[in-house]
Amino acid sequence: DPGDCPSGIRPDQDFTSSNFSMDIRMPGVTPAESDNYLCISQPVPSGRDSYIVDFIPHANMDTVHHMLLFGCRKPSSISSYWDCGGAVGACEDQSSIMYAWGRNAPSTKLPRDVGFLVGKNSKMPYLVLQIHYGDIKAFRDHHRDCSGITLTMTYKPQPFIAGIYLLLSYNTVIPPGNKVTNADVACDYTSFPIYPFAFRTHTHHLGKVVTGYRVRNGEWTLIGRQSPQLPQAFYPTNKDVNVQYGDTVAARCMFTGENMTTATSIGSTSNDEMCNFYIMYYMDRKHAIPFMTCMNPGPKQLFQHIPAEANIPIPV
Ligand code: IYT
Ligand code: CU
Ligand code: CU
Image 1 (tube, rainbow, N blue to C red):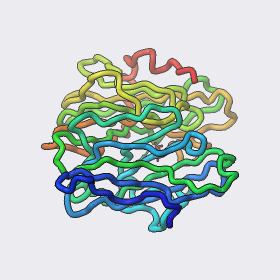
Image 2 (cartoon, protein in one colour):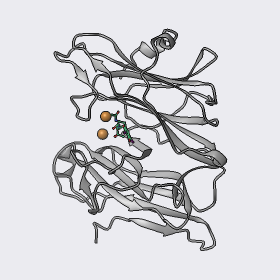
Image 3 (cartoon, rainbow, N blue to C red):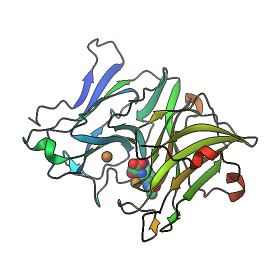
Image 4 (cartoon, protein in one colour):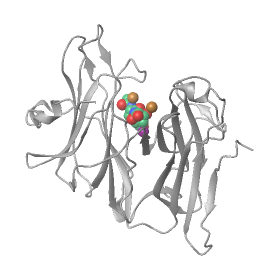
């Protein structure tokens, strides 16, 4: 008994239905130390396309700091669960983030008729769940933890496919003592329309605010703005802002190196920094693209016109 935690695929009660659920839950684990990152993987049904249409988190704020779900070609381990906080990560080839849960953060629902495509035609045969366990005090009684998520899934083709557009800076350096350092990223958008509905920000300790925009004909329209010091979940986007051929997608991370004595660069440890703005969108199934990235340092000229709010810290 793997801690008697539910796992794997469960068909719908009604056997004629195309719906089913999939549990991705820790197999009754007791983290050894505070700030353990543990990962588990589950294959998705491979013979045919399936769609994730809802995420139901099972996590307790007292024990779990955050959860991230990835779609993967190959998980980093075949163990029932593994430590994925160090050299070994979640996936061997980082694929795509699909869901995030953070303490106290609202859980974003996929809109109606929208699903993440997994399985046969998706190049994502595995799902990997990463759980960051917080303070180990909650495990003083040595209980076994079943945290994780239940996915509501269907074989029924969905009219719209969900995807992720990740904007990231790879070359930012935050000098010590400077009150404000901006990391700017921008790309021209040259594909079929996307309809953003949620966004997520990610930095480490020095990020104060991360903001993303659509720029159309010189006009900046907010997609989302959040403090990366709040739970790094997906929050609903500003309003109905679509992105189409000819637009520019732009993001700024504002950092402060005020209290630092050395320069901080982009890297994977908590002493390094990151600048990520994730857009979760849907797209017509006819020409759906599940994952896009933008890593262009934004042109200075463009960012002269960024709204002032992008440099106003969000109180936490
Ligand atoms: C260097 C960097 O910014 N790493 C980020 C973003 C990233 C995510 C994925 C980079 C790649 C990916 O395939 I998915 I290449 C990063 O590591 N972000 C963390 C998680 O790893 C997702 C985060 O919490 O956003
Ligand atoms: Cu966390
Ligand atoms: Cu990071």
